[in-house]
Length: 302
Image 1 (cartoon, rainbow, N blue to C red):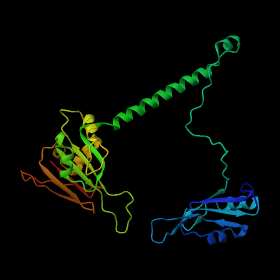
Image 2: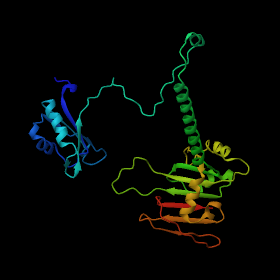
Image 3: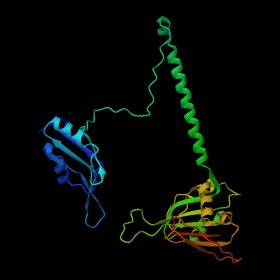
Image 4: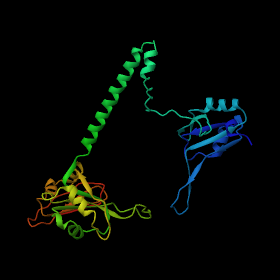
């Protein structure tokens, strides 16, 4: 058996999914390819378990000269409206060491005091400058990274977020869950309905935003106390909501008062065509309109 490293194999990528092995044999027939393979994979969770190509191919030739001629002549050729990229295949070797980009060069350890005293060679000034420059650059990057993290992580002081609550969660069950902390406003986010015939691998759940009374206890203490409780018979993940997300919900509902809790009740239903109509019923008979969103329904109650 011929070793893979001794085979004259070409690697072809950016192939059209409509390209067949016969098409490549016809294209390379002048150089008499000995073998052509288009790898594919099976699409699972479908009725037919159909095959789909990966958009790449391998072609083997008798001599190195034929391989080099194919790469030179056909690299960049357009086949079925796709520009192919052809190059010599390099066999995988787990022992091969690759250079990792961004890896910091190792700094040599300083020599011992005794060795420095016995050495008559002066320290090169270039070495000092290079090390100093590296330290300054590292410090600058670290400062920017920390500043960016702080800017993105501003949390609300009175609103909690539950990313995955049971699908049957209602306003009544949430108010009972938060009853010790005076929920002023609750938002229930329901996902879009899956397309007919699609398989739901993520399960059914809703997301929740709830504004609580944090005057007696801070939000972290409230969250720690609620973690021991169950919502509809299940423990749920609770964390502080991002302030930007709370503001985003307010802007999409076109009702900042809903976040502040000055309205008494509001229900916003968002349709799948991107247009939304909101109808509210309150003691003051107020009405408001929503906007398009990725969510099918947002229910808010005071």
